[in-house]
Image (tube, rainbow, N blue to C red; front, side, top):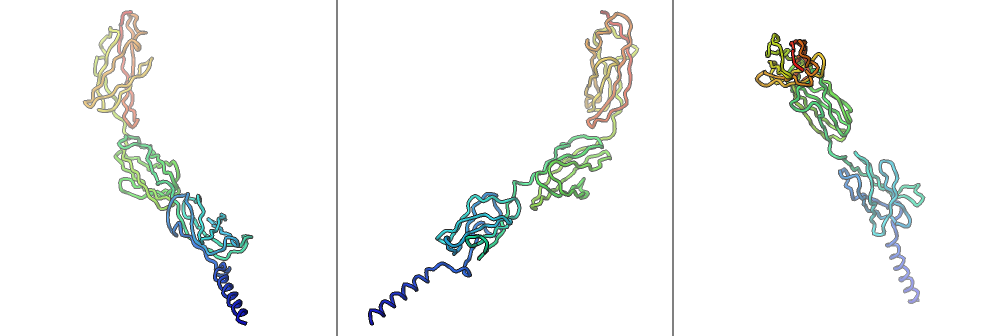
Length: 306
């Protein structure tokens, strides 16, 4: 009798031990994501880790990322890890699930959010450059590396709204009045990040006055194989000299409003005849914005020996 009681107690103890070590039942299964933390931000390539009390021999771990199933492996120590997981830019939804081996029944689920940001938002102005002098047809060109909405301020006024700008962009602006303009672009991309770029330039839609040739007098007969003309014009602009036959030349008008140009052998060689021959050219002024003045014509008499 005592032997039977002892055996019964031993069996009861063994059964109790086995029951205590038994895997969790389906209704008691749990799973968590420990990394990345819910709501965190990080790189696009990371490992995802978590915990679960599911028996690796009876259940499967599935990581659902933005609706796509990715298959992982449960560990006997109640942890799991999925390495080298790639995530899209923006917010990603991660759901760790415990399913049966056929993957058609889900017993436990844990979801979190993880955000991946792309490289920094960059905004550039390509043209015009700071300090440029341009004509009233100017258009500002630039580049933004991620789709953004922009606010544009001109001399503090605005904003003008530009929606869905991505890559290269052009802004007309309507700079029709001569003056200096500072234009500021403020971009906000789809991830909420901001970038600012600005440019200051001068609009000049007024042509300079036509330069004047003051020396030598057109009454003088030119007998040398080269000769120099000089004159005046709007300071810091250019004068274009165009012979009636031959190539045009350009000279800069100095800050004092004077300029000079020498006609050389290339211009005059065909006039080396010893006979009186008219030599005609025009002069026109233009500025940094590309505004041209009307041209003025001058004629000299040449008598140059061969």
